[in-house]
Image: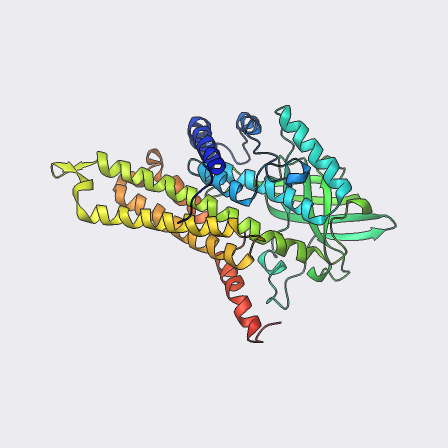
Length: 394
């Protein structure tokens, strides 16, 4: 049996209280707000729990290992998957910077993050990887001929000039800095993929669109373009052409966190459905008395527990495994969609209304099958080692 340590249980209880007290009441407001809306007070409150700096490496002042991160994200996603996704996106940008090994940049940025958190002034980062015509095929080893990239990095002496457009950048409209992945290849091939640290107050950075999304609206998705942005060589995060390796290493963490968010969303949908079954009177008694409803809820609870255990295993494995994290992400997100669908079904016509809250969980759950690599790509990553061992793939 998998048991949390006393410290992990304390974290879980703390996050549960914070989420119930603060996130719960702001989730609907964020969902109904114009695209790009941020609840800054909620971010400031997150500073009090170390949620802004948590994923910084422990030797640089961070406080959360992958398991702690999974626990916290599930509790927050229980009430709002979007806000949990925003926190995750910030943390993954911090991890990208950490995996670059650039001690000078880490010291500078991570100190600013920790100091900002202490003053309740969040200093946020974001990952800028995806473009309109390229995304998952950037990192999967089985893709032999990926699309050409839009964002290029041209070297001029000790400086790189970045130009082009990025899409679907989570939290890019509020980030203080970005980890931008651009190609140095003259033919715009992803083999030249290289990581760069870019502050968002630099000349030539422009947010061009905030995208309306079906779910996870507490985490804005934005498009931005870089217009001749000059980046010093010292701000390069990887060797030229080594960006894919960094992203591949980062994918295991992102998918483990995505699985935790999916579990939290499913839990919220399940609890709505269960409460409705206890309160809804039909035929002289609550519908919970009907075995069909009991079976539906039993299946939902079982699936959530199984997904949580797989998520915990993926987060507790050291080093993180891309294959195992992909399993957790696929299973948990598919489960979340099934549980949210059943919650709407159980609630009938009321479940389709905005007032029910179930339809929000349904929309949020669907998003988890897409982010951090589509489930189709994740399935390829699960089977890739087998094909590689058989000599069918390089």
